[in-house]
Image (cartoon, each protein chain N blue to C red):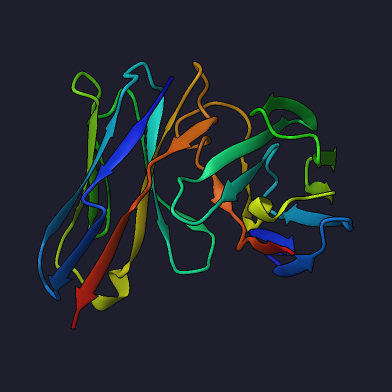
Length: 116
Length: 113
């Protein structure tokens, strides 16, 4: 499989559940990202990982816990979420070193999350 | 802090028309600016990335320009087709980084056959 893949594509969970979103990139990139896209709001950057190290946490609540075990995989662990956390969660990757076209970000299809 | 605005929010044109989408940003100290396309319920597809040293980039029927001094970028689509219907997003980096992006709210484009 090529590009950036995300699983599951759809997830419904209760506020007391614990679930995880998975992202995998097959592009040989070293930077990975989590974004949140809520209805009628701009896409929001949540976390950035460069070479497995977290380099950005954009004031994300602790009920969202990212994990990057290697440069190809990124997880978002979810626990005690709120209904307002319902959104499309997008993963992206990029080369990870600055350069002419290497900042281009490639996105996965997203996980549609609904919190009841 | 970087703010990105896109105008118009929605646009409907007949097939074959040339069109321009606008993006403005408040912090002109950017390393690059990116344009993306998003189809309903899908992820984003990168269209063009313009480095700060460039004034424009072209890919097929798409041409993006960048004017840092005025804080503006435009995406020009030539000879529009129904398959161009999608939401177009621009994104500019913040905090002196090249990859921490602030996105605009997008322009929803509908090309009528």
